[in-house]
Amino acid sequence: MLKPYFLFIFLFSFSNFSFANDQAVSVGYLNGFDDIQGVRVAWRPTTLDIDTTWLGDVDVYLEAGIGLSVVSDQHFAGKDIGSHYQFEDNLGLIIDLDESEKLTQQVAVRFIHYSNGGLNNDNPGLDFLNLAYIAHF
Image (cartoon, rainbow, N blue to C red):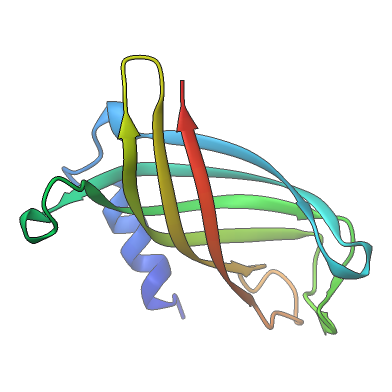
């Protein structure tokens, strides 16, 4: 059975909100406990502006994305995650810190879920809370 958040991200990525200038691709390197290493590639179809007039002059965005990850070891945090290949789903908030002609700075808080999507019998899934600094230049 398809989990509700997979369905949400799938439908959201093909909605009218998927503007070309909001799309992003990210590539990252994972380095964790127990010599876990890997590469992650993710696609964010869009960000949505949130009405934050009550915050004053602060811009806040909602983001959702899906991606693929390859990790060096199938054992992570004492769990057998079943495969070196994982799907990544994320949902987060982005806050603009500063915007100039040359550099836009943001901070993001994201919930990230990794799962092999049932491609293997062992599929405990991993959940992370991520804090990120973003610089667009």
